[in-house]
Image (cartoon, rainbow, N blue to C red; front, side, top):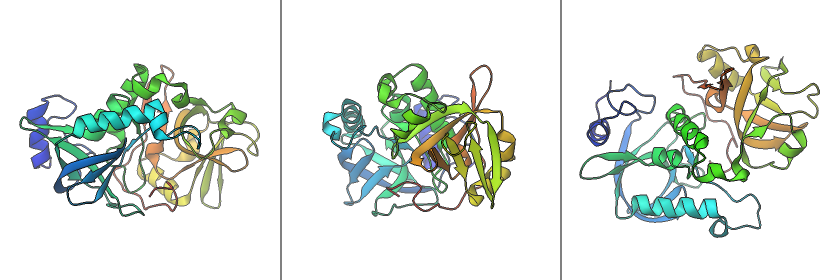
Length: 291
C-alpha cells in the first residue's frame, strides 16, 4: 500500500473500512495544497493561486432545459450551496489522475478537505449526500468505483437530486423518451438484445431494431480496455446493464462508451457490479464537451 499524507489523514479522520488500510484504485498521485477562495457552481471552485478547480468525478445536477439557469434550478442551487458550506475557509489537498487540466485550463483533481482532525474526500461527500452524480473518463477514472458505490447508497435513499424525477434511472426500452434527453448525462438500464462487432467497434443493442433502439457503442480503444478488465464486451448479450453517459442521437438514442466504468452489470437480485480495470485508457475526443 502506498502510504501518503492523505492516507494518514483519512485514517485519522474516519477509521472506517471504506477508507482505512486499503489499497485503493482511488489512491492517486498527490498534487498541491490550495485554499478555497470561492465557489462558481456545484463542482467548480476558485483557488488561492487564481486557478479554477473542477471536481472531476462528481457531476453537478444541470438544469433540464437551456432556458433554466442554475440559480433557478433547485438541485443545482442546492449543490452550489452545499459546496460553499463544505469548503468555506478550507484548505484542499489535491490528487490528480492522468489528465490534470481540461480544455479550458481548469485543474482536474480529487480534492480532500484538510482539517485539524483529519481529511474529508470532497467528491465522495457530494456524491454520498446526493448533490452530484458519479462520472468518469478514460484518463480520469481512478476513483470511479468508489464514487459509484457512494452514489448507489444516495440513490437508494433518494437523497438530494435522487428525489427529483429529472435524474431518474431511464428505461432502455423507452426509446422516444430517451431522445428527449439528447445532450444530457443519463443513467440507462436495460437488457442487451444483441452484441455486434463491426470494424473494431462493438454495438450493444437493447432492442430488436438497431436503427431506432437504444445502443451503447464501444470504440476499439474501449474494447481493449474491456478485454484488459477480463471481459469480452460481446459476452454482454442477454445481460442487464446500467449504462451512464451523454445521450446522442445516432440511429436512435445512443451512449458512447469510452471506458469500462461506464457500465454496471445488474444481477437478478438487483446488485450492480462495476466493470473496472487497473489499465488506464487513452483520452477520447469530445467524450465530454467540457474536457
